[in-house]
Image (tube, rainbow, N blue to C red; front, side):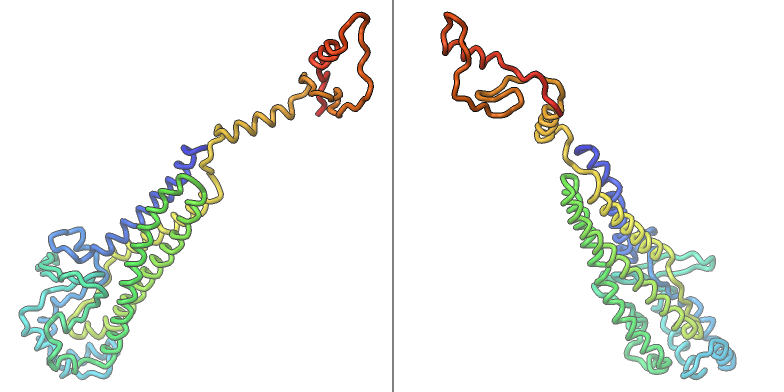
Length: 338
């Protein structure tokens, strides 16, 4: 098949690896630039505070009804009312906050539910979103009035989010290395073998990061969603971000399968190379039937060494040495049997 066939064989996994890397980059770029509408739609979770003002005007009885509907215990209606009053009085709060891998963005929402991002935080490694630290209420008594389950879940979220960040960084680095090493796979199957090892690591870390993100924010929403809803805070997950991260997993798996296939098939050695020409020529000489070849010195027509102590007969009046040389030069093997 040669080099052209080898290039065609690794084209598919090479493209799939690049597609997986692009998806991972999109996950990392989410919530990093306020002026980009595309990147603003990439977030793991959105926390909407627009309805805090309407919830803050509710009576204690109405708040108790909400707590009972969601089965929230450990917090009283008066405590919820105090928190809502303090949050409502803080005019610096944005209408919504979007959580990304490196940071968060905030913005405003108009009466037609159209959102616009105002600003994004500075990218930070091992980022996790602490609502009360972001809202400037970390030193107030608001945190103490929240249910105990909130602090437990936030501690778990802080720990797991660090592992998620590391998994995405490793997945990006290994996938990039997979592309670089994949260039050497054009030359030989050994290059495909080494590239396949990087493909295995890229698939494992990309899958681990995606599973961690999905489970983490799903638990965050299901556990804290009802509690925060009593305060007028809406929690939702970003479909675009999770679509990008799981597409990265799908592309990485496809690349792994095709890289493994390229190890077993599509050799880069040309069938018209010097070594193959010599082998084919020797094979043709060995298998060609009924060919005539001159005999070597001292050989019989069947390839055996001739042993005799008597010189061949000489014609009358002839030279002995001349007759012997003529007989040797004119001897041919009549047939070569397979």
